[in-house]
Image (cartoon, rainbow, N blue to C red; front, side):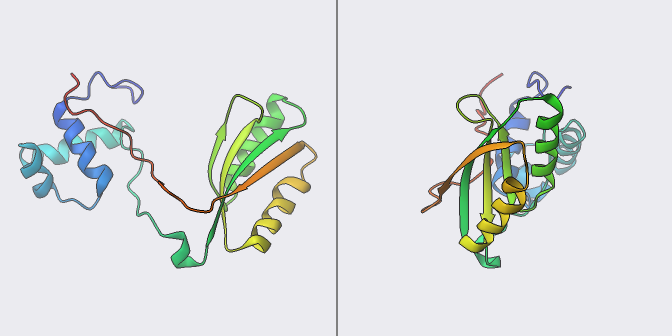
Length: 163
């Protein structure tokens, strides 16, 4: 089963995925009760979906504010030149930068959209100096400060009745 194909994902898998997206601490017993399978069958299905990268990661979502990261920024970045090696380098730098929560290579007027977190404006200023001003391949960047994170998540909408 390729992770890009949902053909081998059945309705039981969809139900299991909806539960673990809401809480990866749900027990096999709880999931089994909810979906109508045995706990062992649930464990086998979860193992298979992890092995095939349908489930990419089991993480705890941490509140940034609880750790002093009170600000979130949506940043549009335009590169000077769209050479493959320079794009690769920028992607690599963003993946390695701990302040960058998400990085998307996009179509449109910008080359990349970043979601960046910082404790305050001074922290963001430090990030921009290190990530953008010290990089000759950055043509421009535009920052939007998040005033209210209305919805934040990575859950995928799963229709439990698709076969």
